Image (cartoon, rainbow, N blue to C red; front, side, top):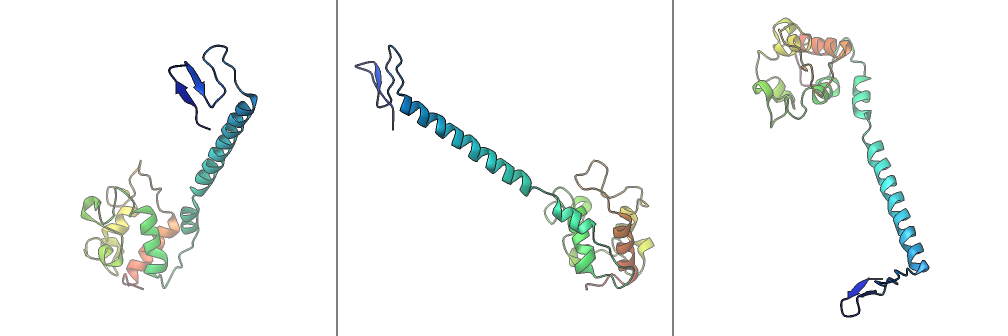
Amino acid sequence: MICQLDLNQKLFKNCGVQRRGARINTKDLKEMRNRAIIFLLCSLFISVIIISGCDDTLTSSIDGVTIPSSNVSYSKYIQPVLTLHCAISGCHTDQDRAGGLSLTSYANTTSDYLIVAAKLPANSKLYLSINGLSGTIMPPLGSSSKPLNSNQIAGIKTWITEGAKNN
């Protein structure tokens, strides 16, 4: 039902409201109330779905993975950690390249021998930075990413020590 204002008769047509006396059809009032309730319930339902969809399962699942102490796979263990903690918006993505570095792929991660010196973690800026041994710790304090856990740091060290293979 669409309310229309008839300027000649100074009343609203088709909605039960008149300028004087302000009569409201109770059927229309109930319908408006029911529509408002349905709208609010739908809005609440959609909000709950959106909020519950913003859980932290990716973070917890990757942070919960134990990287083995030998035969560390880049694709299975290292790249997911780098993607979660380093290759995030504003940091080491292909678009942002903070410090001139992208950590979005094996090729990008190993393109500079100063970043990853195969078999030499003590000479690898990646390992030194995530371990806080280079003067700046990565990810930096205040970053949207939390620091790597000790298993992730040890896993990256092992991967570099084993030759930083693309496996």
